[in-house]
Image (cartoon, rainbow, N blue to C red):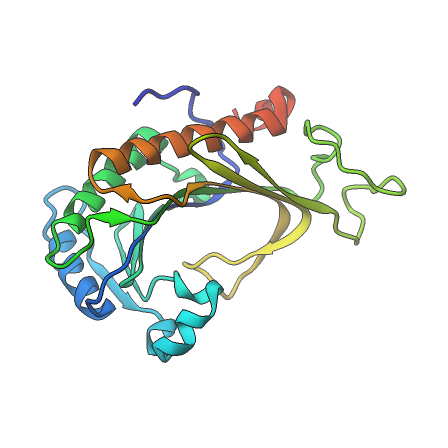
Length: 250
């Protein structure tokens, strides 16, 4: 793995997620407990915080019928820089981003591989994933002229200023032989930080999710795909916002 771009000094990232979906008959509580025990024992940056999320109390038959809830983690395990979410259907690794805390992909990928490696040693865990994805959400100030600088044209019946109360946006998809990317842009939206949910943030958001939904082996095959998904996400981000906007965050 090589870092293809320099890390931005003032990254617009507000959310990053490496996600792996799987199937297991083991209860979420058991998986989370075993994973927490292992992550808490890490000599380098141990994970000391463990939290059961409200969705864990929901009846499984209701969760599994709703695609928006089916793959939401039931437990949250965290340290100062990273947050791991887990259930019996998904594991996610997120890097804290606020206040320029994003570690850069090299460190984030290394931590993700270590956490996934520990997870894969858990007895009863499937050795195959049915979806792997990397999702990055970037926030731009509400008064920044993003629509006038990005390389994707947004059609509108009349000119819309950055401070207009109306929201414009789009969702599109880009495919290749291995990965698919879902790209969403909105000129006015609200982001809720899990660490501070009572203070929602308004802004303009570019959300890029690159993923594969084929059967994927665990271990090095999964790691290689995660790295490729990140590279594609980063490439799309830079291609969309262009060199002029990039300079705002260097």
